[in-house]
Image (cartoon, rainbow, N blue to C red):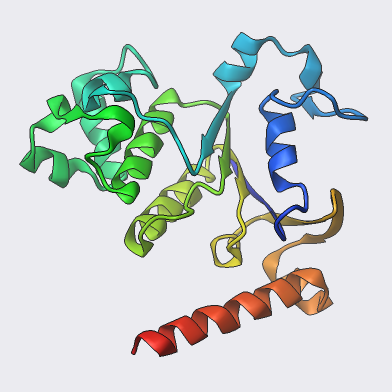
Length: 222
């Protein structure tokens, strides 16, 4: 059984700090942070990398083939597994029209679009198959179609994994089991999307502001 947890808040509220703590990059924190009953500081780097997968909005793709990049997620993955995960992120058709798994990526995969890069990065982490996934603004600065496809896969992943989604865009967190709203490094509110709207507090204010901006953007594009 999985869980879908989201962390939201305005810029500078502490979202990235939490991501740094959970991934072991920020060890100078007060109090306790436990995973499976084990204090995070006591986890070895190997154990942390095995059990926690971190995905940012700038997931790095290496110069080389698509196959080589995917196998970094799981070196023993069979070819049919590679194609299966590419189908999940909706890259299969595109790659089959090109040079398949042997298409060469330039430095930082500059020959792919931003959305394609993020889809490929997602395919790689899906192959890693860890118990916990942290997505830190993983859908920022990409096209709407790619964002929707990636969010669809994140929600599917949360059905059997622990997924922590850090996002400034509240439309992506509405299906979360639980949402934590940060304000200046503290949890200001928490609950489901519906419960937080009913509280009419910080989350509701952020939600209403974003909805107005998105509605205005759609009206402007007409």
